[in-house]
Length: 599
Image (cartoon, rainbow, N blue to C red; front, side):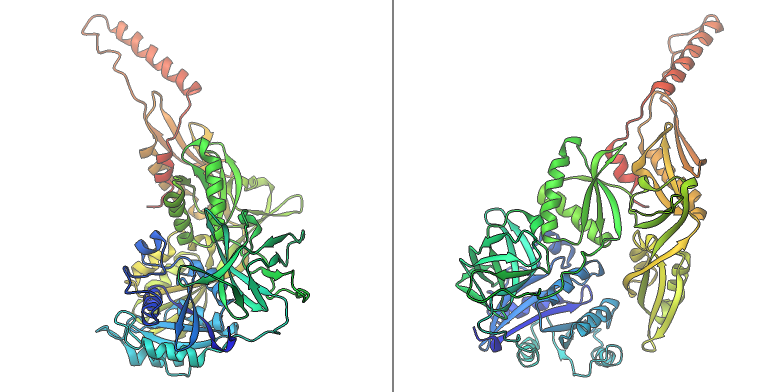
């Protein structure tokens, strides 16, 4: 295949700006598929179709006027920025899509900066020009003023197909062809995605940068210390279904089947080398592998049934193959038994993984309170990282606590500026910058504790701005905090580690009271009184009671001496006291699910 006839590009945009719909029109216009049976053809996951969002990047091959176009559709939500980065590894250009009715949003700016830093050609596109409330001229002006894009944007309607043919011509003319490597070079490809096939094992999605990759080639991973070799069983294209081919040449995007069975052996961003040719394999990777992306939202994840731990572990390993941006480690809880401490890139990321576990693997799980990664100095002179309240040191052993902060960039209409700023102040935010992008649009830059961001910040922001404000964020390092405390929840005197949490000292009472009130309604009543307590720094700071179930021991005493009744009541009282000492309170899993869900 002549590499000058290949164009590798991606579609990037803010969430709900029409990426997947535009991908549908591109597939239809190029004849890659017949008239689509359903919208968002590339959003093949049931969860993607239900939520109307793209979760995983997709690759598909199309033909247009003698050229091969490899499209990579990407997610728009900030939690899945890692998927965007992976897709751009394989591209020379991007289509930057902006909704004419909503204008430039926070993720539009963030994605544009990613593409510019990657040195990719950027094709500005204004979508949804057919809507009555479309602000086409204003959006075109903003793309130059805010994003610095001087080329006049392509105007399209992904819904009707208007302007799509012109966009395809623009992709051919403006996106550079892949650089042609030495023809005699050994094959080298970059792995940017993978998924599990129940019959073929791990399927690798690759972009070939040098030489060629063909069936029967012997291959290995560049960073594999054991230099283990595999046999390429099949290569081909994604069009969009798998189509076997004789080989993949330099510049092409496709898939590889090599009999790989263990998902743990695959790292996205890894360089794949052909080792059985006449030419020696390259001595350096195509791209630095870099450190794995660090999650910053951690939860405890436990199976509903104690015997399901191994099944849950197998399901997490399968999911980790397609989404390496989350991590998990085994942990045990006194209240919930064995489970996992799982790290995510955000709350939506957590929700998606939880739903996929349920739908794809029939795994119902209990999720504990979200936590972030704290740095805690202890008296031994060490600094430890804490991702679970259960591992938070005792108050007397702590010398300092550092809390992670996020730099938040919010684009909001000027009319909602006051409400947004008040919310940021209430979340312990620190003001950095206010920029007036246009008379109607303002960009706020604040730094707030990550723990304030990961629970309900996004929902509250949308509520107070009537849905118009948008959000982008990145980690901004750690700050010293002296007022963070751990709160333990005691049920009948026994600590329940699954309910422990870390909060600023001034919020400890309010958060504890709220949790105990929810818990009181959900824990089943016992034959004895149950005390619910919140403890912090060695003191009880909040308390609730669950009253006992009382049997009417006087039901058969219709009259007679009062002392008989007093003896029965005293006997009942002694029995209750004995049960309080010996009794055990079992909390049903449903109670955990409800009490840990913030109201």
